[in-house]
Picture 1: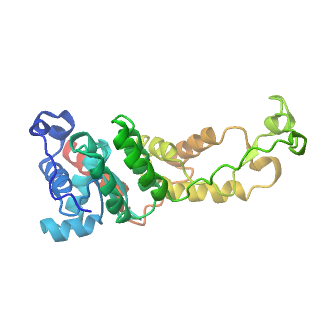
Picture 2: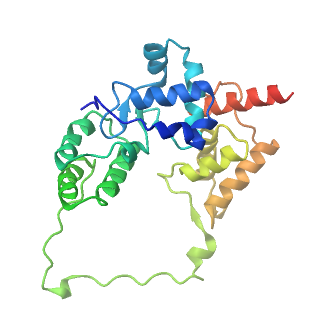
Picture 3: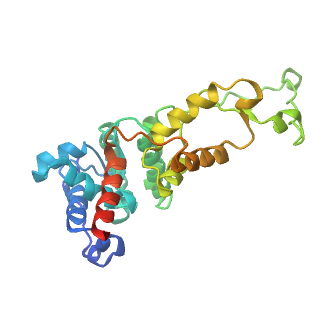
Length: 274
């Protein structure tokens, strides 16, 4: 369900984050806030190139640059692969007026693609409604159960026969051989967002590509060489060596998406300084 009406506070012109945006950044943020496809939960399904061509008649790179400014300041969240855009503070200024409005969110949520960002949105809506009266909380609870991608099964009744339950294995002592020897990188490991942010903040603009090389390398190492006691520290050292020239990030492909926008912003800033 699209939000036909929404509130845009005049105080936005006193907001430090908004005022720090370029003119294009301000226009892109206002476009998202007032876009016809923006739903009543503060999220919409759209691609950046589609927004550029359909609404503004811009080249996609111009919109990406303005969007990247708002993204870096936490004013907007984006899953480029799922084409999901979320405004984290939307509900602060567009709170539901009644429990019936909360019930209508179900139609809005059905329009949004399943992804980690949608799950994060559901969690934030749940936290928001928990601060409202009981009627609002009850209205959202049913939506929350139905909208979560993998709802937890109902707990089974507790059995009275305790002897059928095997005893828990004791925890490994801290000085055990397993702890001392470290562990291998999990087979299902993926780059945590905080690790990627650390890499970007230290000048590496292609952390996902580097993470693929990182995983391939360490999974291929035999025996003790493939074990580490602190994989996050290993990642930081890997990035440092990459930036120093030991493993240079791939330069032959132009970065895309938000990372591409960040790279171009840094390049333009360096050009202006020179």
